[in-house]
Amino acid sequence: MKLNQKWQLGLLALGSCLGMMIAVPAQASVPDISEWQGKLSKTQVKNLKGQTQFVINRVQYGSNYEDIHHKTNENLYVKYGVPFGSYDFATFTSKSGAIQEAKDFYRRSNKHTTFYVLDFETTSMSASAANTAVKAWYSQMRKLTKKHLLFYSYQSFATTYANSARKKFDAQWIANYSYKPTVSFSLWQYTDNYYLKALGQYVDNNRYGKKWGTVYHPLKWWQNKATTVAKPKTTTTSTTNKVTKPVTYKYSSYTKGQHVYLHAGAVRYVDRTVIPTRVKKKYYRITAVKSYKRSHSKQAVYLAGLNQWVLSQDVTGYWVGQHGSYTLKQNSTVFSDINLKHATKTKLPKGKTYAGKLVKSGSYYRIKLSRGGYISAQVSRSDHAYIESVPSSKRIVAKQNIYTHRSSKFTKGNRVALHKKNKALKIVAVHKRSTGSRYFETNKGNYFTANKLYVKTK
Image (cartoon, rainbow, N blue to C red; front, side):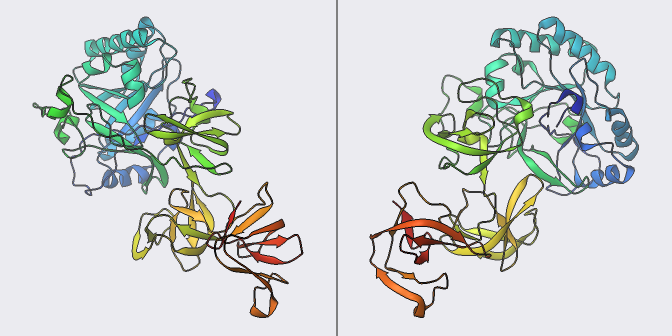
């Protein structure tokens, strides 16, 4: 979710879970709606009814800012039977501020909402003061309503700044885009890149159910009609006999010069200062990397523009610019659409090279294959097939026997000399063809391939 531009802040999208009275697809979404999705039309809301199990509508950004479209959108939800909850993006900085914010939130919320959410994901308070303020918000809301109260945050932030207070709430809604949360939760915000056809936009999406949450609530509970709640899984009820799960590390092999997308769920820089919302969900260029093990990362990357180190788990690398050919690091499914929603039966094997060009879909890059179809342009899934710059050593080493040529046409008749495997060649330039492929020019004015299958930098 995002804040009105006059604040110059981009708020992270929330998702929530609320049961529907009608039949919906098994994979129906559970998104959040805020003013950044705009003033919804009747058609959009009618479509939401069949594509979502429920939505959560942002009501305010603290006491001082009320979402400009929430009333209009909520009235349409009521009219067309779209179940919805309401959330307050917290900005309070004290116990008294939390109490007032709760009062304002309740007063502004639509009476047909089925539950209320405290979205607590940024603060200038200490952990002790933050826990006190969150408890005060909960206590004030409990005086005003008997409906369910939910706590929302990112896992790392929740356990740092509201670890005791969050447990008072009726349910916890945890955001973690890297892996399934390891704290108790009933609703999991697992992505910020779900294409919701009803709106024609990318939104955050959420999962709930027996296979996803550690505390399960049926749809009727989200409709404020349930009377029983399943007990938490035994692995989450004990702190003394808790089984430690092995850490699953995110991709940690980024290199200098790559471009990365900073996740909306990123919380802190490596120096542990808070990452401002306004700098998230944007692309940055990596100018340095270092080994750094923390949380689910084994690497830190330095981002130009931010001039900060961030954990590798907080970014996703994408190929940006025209590279021409790509060698797959993983087996890949080809999709028929740019949004990667409709998989084809074509599977491309790891290690093979394919021609294609980069195209952008919303905030994300894809590779449009020359053979047809699309695959992800994430750097963790593929590598551009050619060396694209002159190394500082100005030397390239043959990985296998290669020929230099008199011209850029690598025909047998243009061959100059055979260079044996492991031989270094001096180069002065790298050139690019219209297809995106690259080739080197030697200090003697001859040419040879820049394909990584045949050469490497020294």
